Image (cartoon, rainbow, N blue to C red; front, side, top):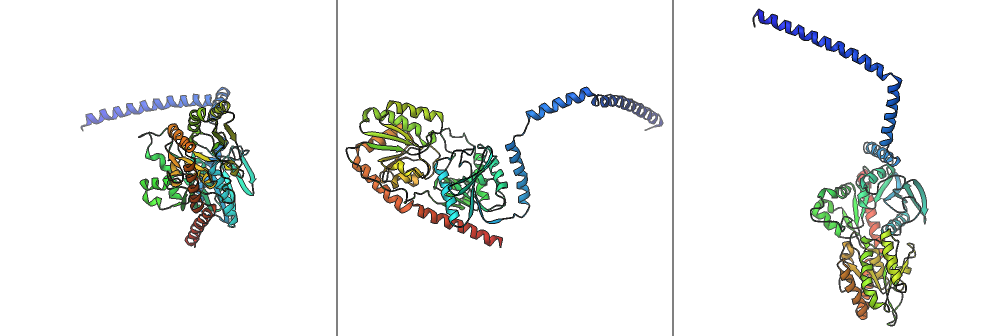
Length: 459
């Protein structure tokens, strides 16, 4: 570069510096105006209104604050040593009471949780049942403490699990019912319970679900020390996903209490055949196909058949269907509700117990209790029911369709001797394989196995 070029370059550089200086001066003046505006009463008023509207529009609910705070606390727990209360056991679940803490649910899962709490108490543990709720509450249900934690999201098991991770931080161990509630539990020993595959439903179609939708189950299995499964359906599913994880699972089927359920009477040929549907009234349990089937049967068999629905009405649709068939056949169709302790009354006069599950079923208590009461069984080939019924030996095993149910009911009506044989075989099966005494021993063994293993690890 020559001197002429150097002079030209310096001139251009000076011009650029002058330009930058002028822009700086201009920005300084604008900045003074902006500061003046920000300090004005008008701007402060507008800013206050805008900020208030935004906070109201994005207000975080009390439930979410608890969930978020629990998630923060969870991280702290993972990084610190827990202060464990030896002998304290928390059973975490979604529903025991309704979310307002007023009405006890009467389903099989709730009865299972209560019986397990009683068993733990008998073993010397201090046990409580935790559930999600709209507001915090504490109750005593027949000697067992039930705590509503005032948070949770029924559609988000992970959010509920994060909440429980905080509330159970001092427990010796936790039992998660269902298993998915263990998905966010950290640094706390957990036994999970799978009550049956709950992701089979009437809306499932090929390619409609991604395998990632089962992440919550797999993550829960990774967190638990052990998972008790009421049927082999979920165990076999797990093997298709992760064989090593399936080795954590233990098959302990559901049960009946021989002190409560027993064969009651011998049926007279001249009496009507009593069919009972002893479960919650909603479509997953087959209330819709039951009503449709008996709409076809009753016109020709009003003199031979009684149908008793025994259970809580789950929704208005089920209630409307029930009201319709009861109004058409007031001398044939009835509805009752019993508490957990009163359920033996439901089976007292039953000839046939209907378990027409359409999806989401384990080893049904209704099926087992029906066999224990000396009734013949009609069940569908869904979930854990295939662990209970051998078609043609101790019951009729059918597809979950109206036509198959009609055929099975008519078979029971027309073949009384064969019906009695099925009932006798069913009684023999449950007495050998599905007693509460056997269930108690299996659970005691699992609790001791898990807690004993943990003691060795901690030492």
